[in-house]
Length: 326
Image (cartoon, rainbow, N blue to C red; front, side, top):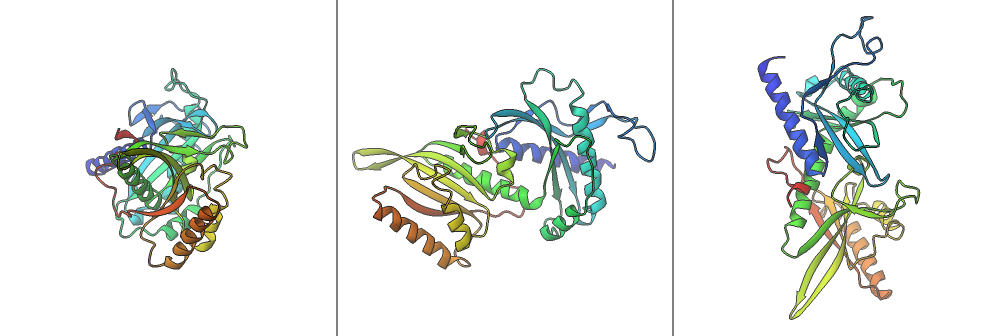
């Protein structure tokens, strides 16, 4: 690897750290360290025993609010030109991440940390030619990747430009909400019945876990102060970050979850759509908001729905605060 390639790689690792810490993750250990290989025969190549250690780009410890467990997540951070993102390179990156994850459970680099599981890896792969990046083509390549694990409990996630830029949009929108002078509190909301099979209570956290990061919808709660003359009122707001096309079907679908997910326990629901959707979905958006607000009025419920639109980026923004902006 040339010095220039190494510099670009290290720079993207720092960008990955910035994004994930802005989502509330906590980095542990330094970036770019080695752990010994505990399965030298199986992790070798071309019939040879592996002689090199495994390199870890970044490691984080995160609370999974759905499971109420702390998990260590191993992150592989890669940046390539578009023609360098191939089935072969993706397979190599994911196999490398899988092997590292297997051996992470056998080393002492994580002694002293309070965690319950370490079975998850995340590949953050950024195409540094964003105008050439094609998400449909990327998914086609990813689906052709073939890797196998001896441990069926290991999980690998892949975030490319498409997901990474959505994270940046989410972080910036959270910053905007929290920066309002009348905002008293903002937390990501985890309902009780989404992943916990009713075993976990609903809770609010300063973290976005992996399940949410790859979800169509993310929920949050905030409190704001409203003043009318000499009267000051604190209102509760539910935020829905909406990463799907807002068709009437999708809007009706999320509305069916309002009761189950305790989303109507507030005075206002703000749906934050990813990107400008007013023109393409104007009729569906107007119909949904008008019909829902009418229903609340008819039922004497002090609740209304509002819309907001999240920004869409082509590059990773320079300043990301998120949950580190307090």
